[in-house]
Length: 474
Figure 1 (cartoon, rainbow, N blue to C red):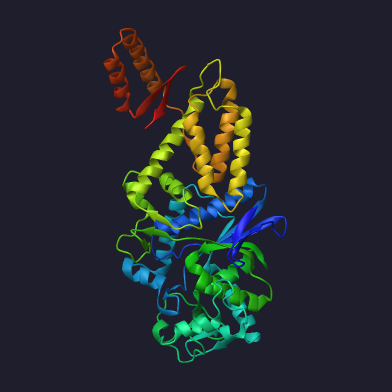
Figure 2: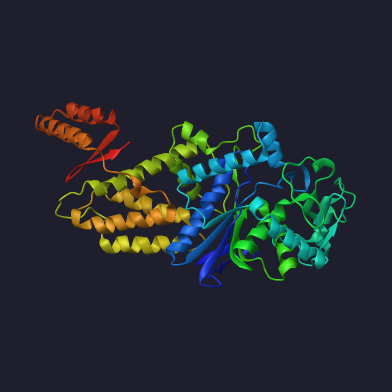
């Protein structure tokens, strides 16, 4: 299997260090609904995990949930996002976190995302975070001011190796920035622990520590949860490209300084989802959530397919027209999958249907996806099959179903999740087909088409083949 490693900036062969793949994915900050830009990352993570598993690997997948410490500015300034959400919704921060965690789970379930092996909230890993701070102070990588405990980035020669930006370059970019805490040595130093003093004296979430009452910084939770749940040096760490320069860079710094070992062997990052040329964000006026997609009448899996149509390392542009196209493609594929409910007793297979070909399709799809998750190429294979196969003979159902199951396993579109149409619908189709047969005998082609159109009102379409008629749901 080959994956693009952000750390080395190239595609590399991937094999796990041990018997089980240690996978960590950055989860949501639960102060608001996840927007569809956030959910692209979730589907990317899920696709990665599915392909690892289809490739025969066991995966221990851990995801965090940020429910404390993520400030509105990555520069360790401003209000905690959970506090901001609580003020907006008129709830406690704990209630806000619980509400948006539940919403996130509903959305990921609707997108057919596999549940992680373990989900850990930042507030459930406070002792592990305190222990890392203790190690960093002991090793003189951290220092204490009146307002916070900071990591001293000047103590690491390779700080910024993930982004490729040297500390000197970041210092130039930081000139002129206002440093709120005068006890901060370098503008790039980041907070490990905020004390409940000054601006944060009324912070709702706070814990005791050996250095004073307070709460952890955003970056620390991931290092602590990884070490607590997966141990030292995991196989793969993922996130969005916006995490490379600050969040993941700081994770690497504090973990490797504390434990003296690499945090992760592979780093994978998905690109932005744009809307009208701009990056989607929760502060945007036109932020779109999965609920908005559903209210417009779209299946959540149409959104999943929309994501998969672009390579994860390519920027994608969302529009309702693009989603409509993905939805039409999903409907076409479901019609293809429905052929399993109506096998035809034809003497020959339709053109393009060959058991050897179907076996080759599954191998080729696995190979393409194992090449840095090439989902657009997998989609091309399924398009080709659905365009060429018009019916299925009974004895071919096993290989047909196995191929659909393979696509479900890797793409997560649940093509086999639909049930057969009802007996009443089948009876209605049979009656219309008898009427159409008589109309054909009378060469009344207007009536033939009219009878077909009447079924459209029942949400059923018909397609005539040389061996009979097949139905599909609209």
